[in-house]
Amino acid sequence: MYKQEFENLLRTNPPRAILLYGENSYLINSYIQHYINITDATDSLMRQYFDEYNFDSAKSYLSQSSLFGGTNLLIIKRDKKIPKKELDTLIELVNKSSDNYLLFYYQGSPKDAKSLQNSFSPKKGANWVRLFEPNINESLDILQKKAKHIGLEIDHFALQHLMLLLNNNLTLCANELNKLAILGTKVTSRDIDRLVYSTAPLAVEQLLIELFEKKPIVNTLSKLLELGEDEFSILRSTQFFINQIFLFHAFMKLHGHIDSKAILGYKLPKQIETQKANLALRVKSSSMLKIFEHLLEVELELKNSPSTNRELLLYGAFIKLQSYL
Image 1: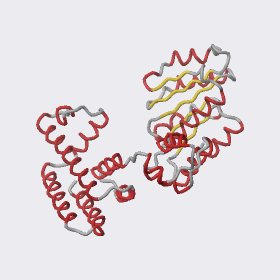
Image 2: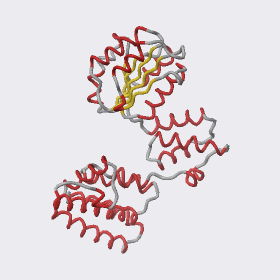
Image 3: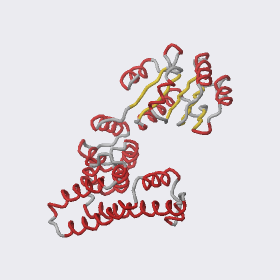
Image 4: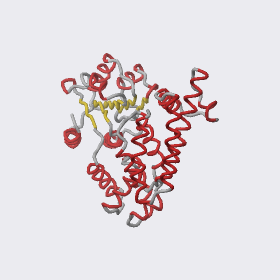
């Protein structure tokens, strides 16, 4: 099932056992909050997130009457599958009482989620919904509804500006709308520039990761320039990033393992540490020297070029840099 059909069901007959998955985490979390609201289960719900999942306690919770005389709402959020036998048992328990609800927010691969759909079949009194990443118009519509709901006056162009500044991250945009509502006045693009912190540094990091993974980078680079990042700041960030990758590359050559604290002087989160190690493995030692020389040449070209030519030079520089990887 997809978004429109699911929203029609929510208005008429909300499924009591539902599998939620996909790329739109903002909408999924909004639907979970909708269930909490319509079931009035704030005081009686059970959350089991990631490794907190325990089949016996989940089964016990759905097998008994609510301690508060209301609804049993079980919310499971994890990136690993639940064994089919356990899922089927939990859904059977949901169907035994009209006061029972089960929401499973699966954060693993959408491809892997397909095998879970069998348990959440309408024939078993359940359902599933996949939420895709929204396009610009869908995001604007969602944020306009959010602004109206919280009584915030903000025009279409200011909303577009907010989305550009926060890289179309719906969750961040919605959080900023809550903060902007405190002003109690109409919010303009100028207010957003003054009060909202840009995610451009994160976007630069994403650009460079895409560069090393040999993915198309034109759209991300264009978005960074639209956010107000200048060519020199992007080049400096690139040089800093390449230097880190070189340090990871050299450390692995010498020691055969990765330790970000020994390399950088501080410990990176495990996921980021592994990601940078994997990127370092993609590059040959001979290519690293060519990349450093290329970036020095680009820096000299940018400094000696008129501002009107710098953007084009930067695009060309990144395309050539990618050829070394």
